Length: 274
Ligand SMILES: [Zn+2]
Ligand SMILES: [Zn+2]
Ligand SMILES: [Zn+2]
Ligand SMILES: [Zn+2]
Image 1: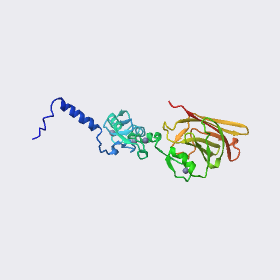
Image 2: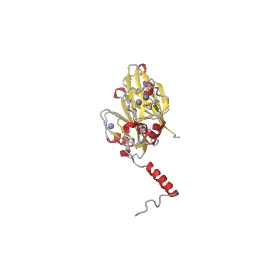
Image 3: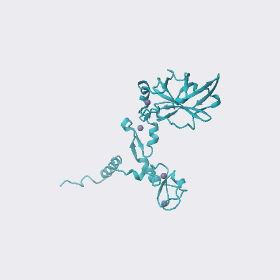
Image 4: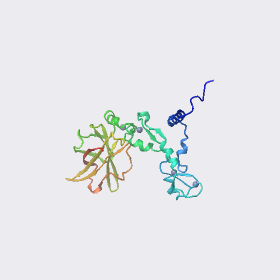
């Protein structure tokens, strides 16, 4: 008979147990992800997680909505954290939703959407109405070279920090600025409101370090006067919003408008990254 107990005594046994435990740490497991969703709003739980004295859970946005009263047992909820669940949550890593596009990062459960905004592999949408193109920010520049759209394209100067003048038709709503330097695409959007026109500029790219950060100066010129808007950072977006912006815009009042065209001066600067 094989001596099953011959090598399982003394210090070597402790070593064996420890080693097995270390290996266990990375052993795949089946998980029912429903238990990591808030039982009240069904959104993925994120830290902090709260519990009542009976151990019922609620996410941090549900607690104030429930007036800090547990819906299951009416005991107070929103003061005591559920540290055990928080550490379980921190230990769960799932592949980035862009794994199929090449991202190899694993992200904490419930943090995927935060990562996707910063993931260099996230897919960006073409903002031109009627175009359903989706692709990497690196391919967008080529998209505006290869395909024509019923809007205007303007090439950014070969060097950032050189200003240039462009005209935009308000009713067109969108103008594409192609930047050859880093093959980045910026989009100028106009929103006509009863009291004036909102103008905003964004870069169609994720907020990934490899994209870089930019600030800009935008001036509107009329009758020899100009008004300037300086933005400390161009917003980087995967998809432009079609809603009138609430922040980071220049508002040109109606009294400054002369017909359908806007004469603008634009200067973009790449910011040094820490
Ligand atoms: Zn909730
Ligand atoms: Zn309860
Ligand atoms: Zn990713
Ligand atoms: Zn397109």
